[in-house]
Length: 564
Image (tube, rainbow, N blue to C red; front, top):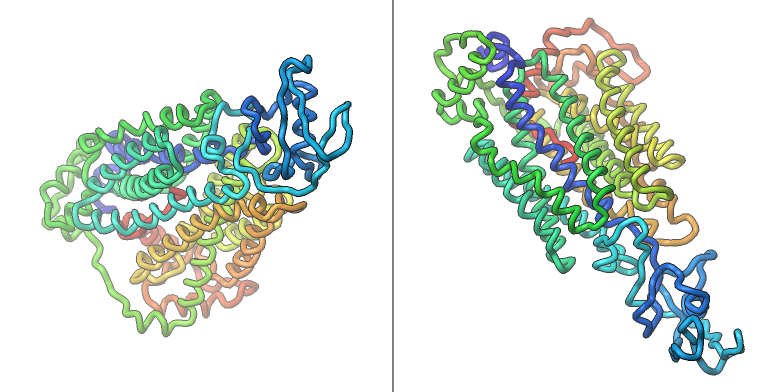
């Protein structure tokens, strides 16, 4: 008897299971806070160079004389004030008594303007101080740390630090999880989330800001993965599809709450404090959630594993069947040699296609999300539309993949994302999110059981690499500049999405098919299905598919990599 068989006997989603599941997935909303808060914290405010030697300068025009000083000092670029340069050798003699408006600029060796001699120097130099438009936010990290012009890359560096923290967290939390259980890294991740969030709110330099982002990167992967394992392991096969969808909805709920916080709190430091306060509840999770029963059984702690199962049975008014050996509930591990893997051309092709898709999906998702600050229009409306589209995009695939199939829905999502991302960023993100939700269902079904976990584990690394690159692509237009700066990031994201979407047509359809157990099964699957234009051969073994998918989902070795 396996764990799923026990859950079928004692109840698949009873009161106790629902409570633990909700506690386990609730932090997903908190992770959405810290992951996407940079959209508002690093909001790209309109700005220009500050007037030299004038400490009362503001972005908004004060009077006609102030406007004249700006026009004499700041070059025009495409009809707008240059954000990064001033004319050389500009100086002012400010005489408050000589002008009703309070300001009179004096420069020499030039031409007359309004009765004054003004310089006509056309040389330019980069400015070191800026004034910002505070009409949307009272203050942002962009304005506090001057993350503009040559320093614009610092925004991408900050986001990269969070992704590096996530990569580091995958290694560290994975080791801790195997040695000490799921609760330990989950709790440590909660501590890191609290420390990193409040640390950002009170930081005074970009260096410490980035250190805190690195800590948050560690926290979000430790909290998400281990919370997911604890929650999903207690859910029976019948309710597991709902549980998988609910996680994505919780993420979207976190995005909506983030939007409300950002709308009513326009100071980025107070916003970060408000977003960090709810994470304090994670400090009490040690006493609220149980240890993974699978891990307990694997470590020979059968009595503790049985206590968790007994709580489930009691809450469902059922009786726990007699289990002679709790360790026997676990699936046996099978090892496939590296030599056999590299000899299979079909397996190598599938790996390359899936890994490239994982990389591109994360680039598109994060790239378009971070690019919201660069879009025209109201940032709050743009963010709201993105969240609504994301929620719909997560829901639709779950109604289509079991009717149409994984391959057509996934390929259509990626190809449409590539086309539409160039014309309409939000619609492109819609299909990108759709592909995001399918790849973690479709990907594991493409590989033999003996290497399924390790293969998807390698895929997680590619998602983190994509997450590191995505911020730079989102800001590529700002860094490059020019007439087409808004189109450059979309083209860079859309082109590879089109390529990997077409390459995915090589992959076989897995809907209703028996999942491959060995390399021989994998080769047989390809021979039966042939090319993308060929019809599938052989009746589907739906029951065996369900059993295998359910067993695969409960495996504590498969890293279900979310956006966290």
